[in-house]
Every structure is written in structure tokens, then in C-alpha cells.
Figure 1 (spheres, rainbow, N blue to C red):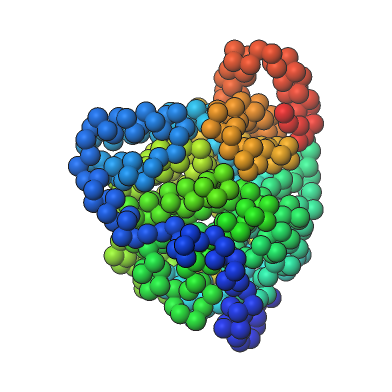
Figure 2 (figure 1 turned 30 degrees about the horizontal axis):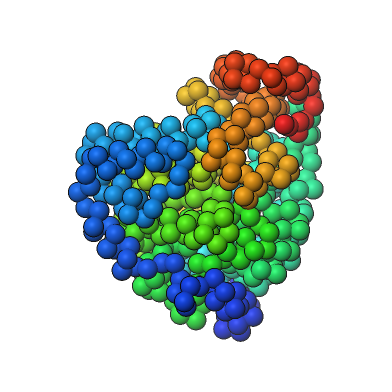
Length: 502
């Protein structure tokens, strides 16, 4: 489906009436109010100016016990400027990450399925009134072709499928897309390449629609609020569009939990408003999910705004986030929500990602192409007219994994937890206790062995072998009761068995 679908007029007001269900917002409000209180957030940030060093140490000690921070505590960390205290925050963030997630990094690829959209977000290249973008929606044979490249040539096991908000990419289309991706199986060196987990980044959905995706086997459902500042949100999302409804978007993750999709991903687009306010908004979001469902977000994303075709807003953003502030916001998120996964995207360049990964990052994308149909298109250049923004890190998955291995990090392709029921509250309890990292260490080794044998270049394989040897020795020392069973499984994987997990 090409430009014709976008050219056919959509009655956006009627579409919004059919999509937005006020009763699925109001049920989560407290006395008619949502959990974002701008005046309170601004006051908490102001009250925390010039924090006492002793208090900062107490806050960091609390976080090391894998306890979520209260908003005033996060506000104090956001106001830290002392170099020594920042060094302490870096140390604690890294320790939290290793305690909860060990030394593994999960990789994935974004699969942009459609850039058709009815919204007019002023910062987005895909906005409906931007004539500079070539519009299309992938049909299922095209999605199959894209997936064959990702699973067969590159070696990914996880994808996040990205959809615009448009009648042609409704819930039935998303469900069909998931089925298509999961059905792909292509020959690789020693076995077959398959995608084992498909996460989704899409528009806010109703509880009924989310139940449909849950039945198909959706992984994490990801919806970014973009900005938690209501007035900025109103200004950047024109009235008369679906996205103009702040609360419909704000409570999408609540509806997801109620529908049974209990792995959710939240995020903000940094550069739309004061970065400190956005971090406080993310924390408020996590705390309200915990309060109402006992489960916080599975992941938090924190992308910075990037240039896009024919989008003047992004050329001179009023709230541009410096590299120093970007590092600080990453540290505070890691410390304030210690159990959550953190996604550092390829919007950032390779140098920035390499520098920041040790401070708490758990997931990164690699070999990313964000144009519609860009994986099966052999052209390597980024094409501004078909993608949402310009990427900063265009390294291949092989190159990324080699760099991680040389830093002593193991790349995990494990998806076992989702098939063993370790989702939602179960995985949150395991993460908080540090137990999930033990399961993940075993499965990370097995899946990394798979990937090295099926996809790695010789240079990357050599770097990976050193990491595997170190990890196996840790298992021998730390988990002697399961070591013999683990080694038996590891030998099976070396001999071609696939998708073996603990």
C-alpha cells in the first residue's frame, strides 16, 4: 500500500470518536485527576536545589537495595552537579545494573511497518501534513521479506514492530503482522533463523484491542508519552487529532496491564520540554503503575530528538539536551527505577552508546534501518524521505556485538522468560531480588553460543569466545548445583540444538 492510502481522506474526528473510550481513562483517575501534577513536579525540583551530599549518599544506598525512589529523592539526584557525587551516581548505576541484570545486553531491531499517520505532531517527520515523506504500508509478503533478512542474514531474535496511527494499520493488521513475523523460518549456518519475540510500538489502544494482541503473542507493548508536560503536549499535538488527547495516551499502559499485556514500555522524547521534568514524569508513570497494578514498566526509553525531513521544529529545539545532561538523566532513571530495563537507541552515535552502556543500559538496537522496507532494499544509505529521523549509530549487529564482547559484555538473545511465564509481576519480583539475572546468565550463554555459530564473523567469534569462557567459569563458581546440567545443554547447543533454555 503506497501513497494512495494516505491520500484517501480520513475523517479524523469520527476516527477519534470510535477509537477513544473515555470510560477507559476515567476509571484510573483519582478524584478526577491524573498522576501528573505539573506544579508539584516543578516545586519538587525547586525544593531539591543544592542537595546535601549526605542525603545523596542515603538515596544511593536505598537504590542499591533495588527500591524505587520517591519523587523528592529523584529530584535531589537531578539537581546534583558536584563531580564527586556524579561519580558516585555512575558507580551506583552500574552496580544496580549488574545486580539486577548481570553483565548482559539484549539486542533487537526496529521494523518500521508503516508511516501512514493521521496525527500532526510538529516534531515528527511522519506527521500527516508533511508532503516530504514517501508514504506506504508494508503488505504481509513484504513484512515476510523484511523478517527473512533480520532473522536470516543479520541474526536478530527480537524485533520491535513500529506502526503509525491510521485506519489501515488497525489492530487486525498489527495482529496479522505478528503472525507473519513469527511464522518466518530461514536456513542459517547450523540451524534456522527465527524471530522469537515481537514487541510493538503503536498508537494507544483500547482494552479489547490489547486483549486481541495478547492472544496473538505480543511481547512488550510500547507507547511513549513524548512529553509529560500537559501544556507542551497540547502545543505540540494539534487539536482535532487522536494524539491531542493527553490522558488517552497517558493511561494506555494501565489498559495494557488490565488486558493481560503485563510487559509495558514507557518513554519520553527528550528535547520537547525540560529534561528534568520529563524524568520526573517517567517516575510518576512508573509509580502509578506500581500503585494500581503492583508492576512497573518492563522498559524505559529516553530518546533525544533528531533531525527529520521538512520538520523545522527539530532544527532549533528550545529544550535541547546536552551530552552531560543526557548522561545524568540516564543515571537518574537507572537509580530511581532500579528494576526496569533501559533502552539506548541508535539515535545516539556509537561513541555515546559505548560510553553510556556501562551506566545501566540493558537493551540496544543494532543494524537498524528505519525506512519502510529498508532491510530488504539493498541500498545502504539512509533515505530521509522515507524514515522518521536520522540515525546516529549505523553499525552492523556483528560490529556492535564485537565491541560489546571486547568490553566484557555478553549479548543475550534469550526470550525464555516470556515463554516460561516470567513476565509481569513474576519477573518484577525476580528482578528486584536479583534472581532473574541467574536465569538470564545461563540462557544468555546458550543463545550467544547459538548466534556466534550461526552468524558471527571470525573476528567477532574470537571476541565472543573469550566472553563465553569467562561466563562459564562464573556459572561453575556461582551455581555449582546446576553446572553439570548447564554444560550438558551447552554441548547440545554447540552441536546444533536451538532454542534450549533454563
